[in-house]
Amino acid sequence: MPFLSLNGITVPVVEGRRRQVSIGVDSRSFSGVYRLGRRATRQEWEFKTGPLSSVEALAFRGLIAGDGHALAFDGDTFTSRGLAPSIATGSLFQGARFGGGFELPLGVSCSWAMQLGPRWTTLHHLFDATGGVWLQVINRSDGARWMQGTAAASAGGLIVSSGSLSLTGALNLRRFDDVVGLPFMAPDSWVPEVAAWHSARAWSALPYLSAGGAFSVGETKVLGEVRDGEFVEFIHQGARVIGERLEFTLREV
Image 1 (cartoon, rainbow, N blue to C red):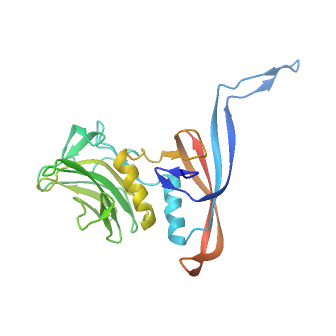
Image 2: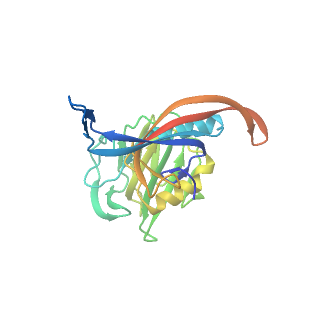
Image 3: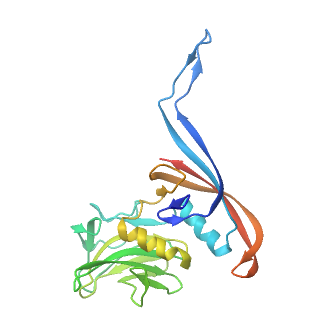
């Protein structure tokens, strides 16, 4: 078990501390008696990573900040950040991979203007009517694609154009679930962990993240914030490079 993972992705932390935050205000009366106004407590964690390459640092910045959109299709077609589709088409159904799903007619597309930028990663589940199974698909802006964690040629009915994410219904491949658009490129090393985690459960409703690992008992719903980055020189894949050590905070929701 890693010390810290976010949505199943191991974060290489080397240092951290925990802080307990009280909800409410404690005070003293005029006579000096201490009055407890605390209603509840929440946890905050501050971490530092080890040296990261520039590609890894950009990806972890996006991951920790909860950047991107997630589409659960549980009752509507809005993303987790409240973004509606640009074209109202398709229909919702129950009994998808994780609850509700989205179905498109053959040859019909639906898109969301997620503003993913030039470097992006997408995740989604696609129902193969021929095989009767749900497939987990990962696409990346450099053209790399994976299906069920294995390199594949098919994009699974999903494209990204000018920052917008679009789904298209194809023969025997018209049902989708848990579509995620991330405005950063996930490194190859993330793919096995992402595929395993997303095959077993829905992605978190961004910007919220699911934090797990030995740092805490059980999983915790958190919001992340990257504070500082320290440039460092280190050996990466046999070459001397300039990278970053990130400092970030996770706050229990």
